[in-house]
Length: 258
Length: 342
Image (tube, each protein chain N blue to C red):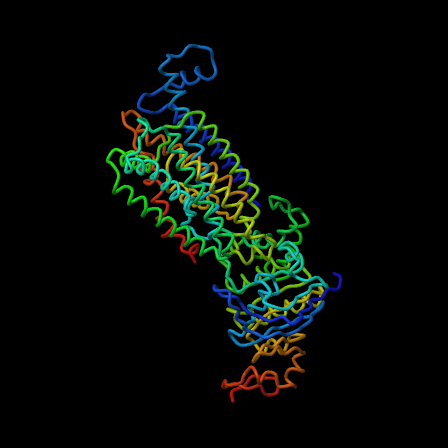
């Protein structure tokens, strides 16, 4: 896969309400990301992580500033262009009656299949391979509504994988999961970033996981976006900004009670 | 893919039963017609008694055709709406198409009686159909404007319900103020009628159904992705606004013509998609759309046969039969498919 990049320039987050007045929820920041990077987005509830990810995936219009992917501003991209550049896994639990895991994952091939969505042999191969990669090969013909949270999350990641995009964005992929599942999913994503040269950006509330496994952390705290490796952020005490006025503190790279 | 063969088998079987029910619908009625007569009317030069051929050509055959078209149109629309709104109780009328048509017809039938305009001595079916069609077309226009401006599909849903409520209120007022005879004509219209459609009107229905179905068939891929919800559909490459507009247009074409020519026929649109899902145990619209077409045709023809009470001299309104078949299905859905409702 060829090199790619995301450039975020002076992006601020916010929304317009019904009377068209503008509400900025996070002031401008600039960031870059490139191939093979595994990036954790952390910050407290309500700081704007989801809004940021929604803006990045084009589900929400840019409030102000600019996002470029491979040098191209995202305003010029159609939904199809987006679908070929980035896949997205949201926190929304998909529960559709009688939907098979295979058919769910097959939807990731949307932009590649013909008018009626018929799968080629190559498509089917990619789907089965992706299911193997996430450890779901025994679940191919199971109903999605019968899966556990961990299994469903793996299936959703497989669906994002078959979309075959250089960028993957995941909104809290480890929410609702038990500790072993959390680590397995994050390790799986980390390996994907490495092996397939993907840029993977995921939001999480699990600071320990982010500190141990992410290449880079984007930390949103007190109106500032901190950007750096876990070690850099610990050194500059960025986490103290996030944990201010709480009963927690960061000590030797671990979250502790004060 | 072990069950693909079974699906093909079921499709063939359902096609045969549809043909069988279509024939039965022509044979059975207040006067029974022998199969031999039917065969002679269509395929041989042998003379058939003129009153028999008149019954077949002027009453039974158009009625059966209409039943078939109505069943197909409403079932497919119900499926589309349940997917788009991700709601198991969505039906073809959820966009307000039938309320719009209701209002159109009420204004025409009742309004003219209130304002003592000169009512044509025989209110032609075509005038009612036109009033209904104008009503539903205007509703579609409103829904499209709303759906272009509003992203959240639930808001569109609430808008549809509110619009229906407003239309019902106006219809109520008209009913309250209108003359008894006009009121009766209107009430009879709301009960649904498959039998007063002429061959020229059936041609119109056929063309509109075919156009609507063609659009639906080309939306199948999008409908499948919409099962995952709007966010996933968009990130997979679906242009949500465009897709919604296309789906709403096909729904309005299909349901609009049903309401215009046959009145607001209920329950089929909710029940048949669920029967199709229970039967085929699949969520893929490539299977569900043809399944709804076939099951809708079968069930509507069956309802029509029952409504004519073979051997008796009366016909019960189609909506009453449809309700008796549809309601148990809907109750079953509510009791058993909690998962779908989340």
